[in-house]
Image (cartoon, rainbow over all chains, first blue to last red):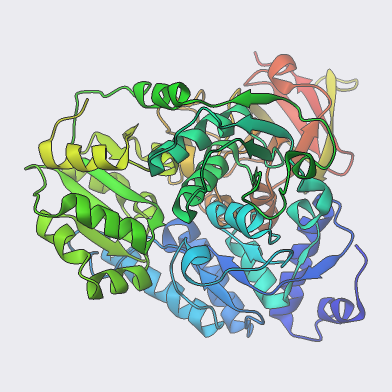
Length: 414
Length: 143
C-alpha cells in the first residue's frame, strides 16, 4: 500500500502504540483486498458487547485503553447484549453483566460514544453522498451505501475501532466506484409490499439467490415511494441472507437515477421479478412445529419511533395471551421519546417488554433463557432475526406485523 | 506422509496468514460464526445447517460463502482464545468481516478458488493451506 507521510509516522509509532497497532492491523486487511491506499473517514460505528467479545475481546479493549487509545473521529456503539434494567428479570449472568459494564467503561475511556443502537442511521448520524465512514453492523452499512450513497464496507468491531483510532480505512470494496454498480435487476412491479415483514421477505428471496457481498441488486418498478423503515428491513434482510453490502432502487436511492446508471452501463447478470405470490410463498414455507406461540419478538433491527408508535396502536387495549411473552428492542433515544409521547404505556399495559440498547438475538444467556422459558418457536416480523437466531436452536417463523400482534394476543398460530 | 507432491492443488486468489496443515471440513453451505456456531463448543448448531453437529475445532474449513454478520470480527478472536478455532478458513466468496476477524485472530484465511473443493475434496481429507504461495494442497485422502 502507498502510505502518506503521516501514515508512515503512525506506523513508526509517532502517535503511540495503540495507533501503530491499529494501522498495522488495517494494512494487513487492506493488503488482503489489494487496497492501494487509505482514505479518511468521518464517522465510525462499532460492535462491541461481551457476548461476542468474550474474555479475549474484553482483554483486547483493556489493553488498547492501557496503551492510550483515543478515537479521533466520532464513533458510536451497536446494540449490546444486556439492558441492565432487565438483566435480573431475564436471569442473565451477573458475572457477564459485570463484564459488560467493563466493556462500556473501556470504550468510554477511548472516547467511544456508547449509544448502543443498530439504527444509528435513523437516530444518530446520516452521512451524505460520497461520505466515507467505517460502520458495522451489516444493516447500518447497507443503509449507508444504498440509501445515503455514503461509502462503507462491513467493518467489524475491531476494524471499526481501528478506523476510529486512525481516522481512516483501507480503500477496497464499497469504497471504490467499481464495486458499487448494480449486478442484477429485480422487478417489483407486481409486488405490493404493504408490511415491513414483506420487505424482509423480499430481502430473503433476493439475498438467498446471490449470497455474495458484491452482488448489488437493482430494484425497479415499485409503484410508490418506500419509507425509511421499509428500506431498513429490506437492507437488513439482504445483508443477512445474502451478505450483501449495497442495493439500488431506481428513482429512490441516490446512485440510481435510472437502471442504466445503476448498472454502470453494463448488462445485468440476470433480471427477475418478485411478486405478491412470491412473498406469500415465503410465509407459507415456515414449519410451525407444535404451534408454540410463547415468544413473539420485534427486534433485529431495533425499532424506530414510528414502528413503536404503530405497535402501540396495535396493542392498545389488548392483553398478551397467557403464557406468551413479547419483546420489543429499541435504542435509549427512541424508548425515551416513546415514553414521553405515550407510546410505551399501551405496550406495557398489554404486557409487552420494551428493552433498550440491545437486540434480542444477541442477549446474553439467550440459549438458557430459551430453555428456562420453554420457548420452541420464535415468531417475528423481522426476516433478519428469523434468519440469525438459529444457533440458539429456535424454530423461527416470519409473520406480518399485525399478525404477530394477533398471535401474541390470541395464542393462535396458523 | 508418503513422498512426492500433493495429490491435488487448488489455487486461491487472496490469502493471509502462515501455512498450516490439517483435516478438512468441506461445507456445501455458507458460514457465520454468530448464526451457525455454538461459540462455547465449536460445534455448528444451527438446525438444518448442512454441517449441523460438526465440530470445526482445529479443522481447515471450506465454505463456499460467508453469511451476514459483523460478529466474526470479534468472534474468530474469541474462539481462538477459547481453543476451539479452526486452523484455517478457506472461502469461495467471503466478506470483509471474515477477513478482519481472521487477521485479528492470526488465523489463515483465503478467498477464491480455481476448483470447487466441494467437488474434489471430502471432509476428513488431510490438506495444507499455504497463503504465501496462494495454494491449498491435498496431501492424503480420508481413510
